[in-house]
Image (cartoon, rainbow, N blue to C red; front, side, top):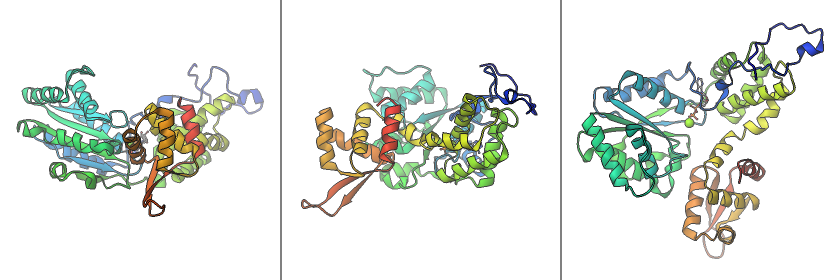
Length: 391
Ligand SMILES: Nc1ncnc2c1ncn2[C@@H]1O[C@H](COP(=O)(O)OP(=O)(O)O)[C@@H](O)[C@H]1O
Ligand SMILES: [Mg+2]
């Protein structure tokens, strides 16, 4: 589609003039509405950025940086803050190597160290035939020989909370200097899961070396949301595409869903919707209509990161009543997949730790405690998203 500027103040006399031509678009630059876009203007997070920089500062002198734990609800700028920090560090020096890991994708110790390896050596270690130990050794040797300091960000670290992966990963990263005092590694953990106090999940021997500085990211106030979204609208759309009262509606929805990402996604979908209808402005109707899909943006992301058998189990849960007993569920799961109880149990723990389900012990039942599993979302929404993501 051609990027053709819409003349503001278009004559309203002829209705056809108020319609978008097929080669016109409302978007000046659609990139501003992509969820992984890193904003140039990152305001209202000054104190968090300052804390992150202070923690990273020792690395610039060749010393070990201070570990951090960034926490706060979804859409409060945690990922963006760390990526901004990394951008600055990389522009400033080659002696510090920042590695960003998305734990939704890299869920094992091997996968995470492969990311580090890839960043240092610019190629991926082979998937099989290489032990973790060898990768680890190559990484530490490189850091010593090249006199580089490593900072690893573990984003959405709650994806490592099951199967004790979090301890294995942190232990390997933070105890690296025991191999040699010259190995300097810092960790920035990022978590949006406020229900779990992460430090309580950690082994004492991991905790004793982690000791993170906690940096909290609160929800944005309404004024801050307005400021942030107005900036996106100004850069992303042509003038007058989003009237002020429509932006207010968007902010209402962001406050309702407590997630800025929903607002950004809604604006993009509403823009596309208005284009489909050949309108030159986004209406409140476009917004509410698009919200139906955007409100599930988290669910969509979480489900996309699941493996096939994890999706199948989630589907069985969603197809059940509002709560199911673990025993009954296992029977169905086993019939469908022929997988055993250990795998079943691991998947249940994973779905719980990424907040898709809630597992609960009840005191009832003749055989003592029965595990009940509840979906945290509407079953219909889960089934729709599963269908939409190819499950
Ligand atoms: N202060 C801000 N200024 C501009 N955009 C922001 C700001 N905070 C967050 N965003 C945007 O909101 C979305 C969510 O931010 P993100 O850093 O992913 O949040 P979190 O990691 O806390 O869930 C991203 O698209 C990001 O660009
Ligand atoms: Mg994030």
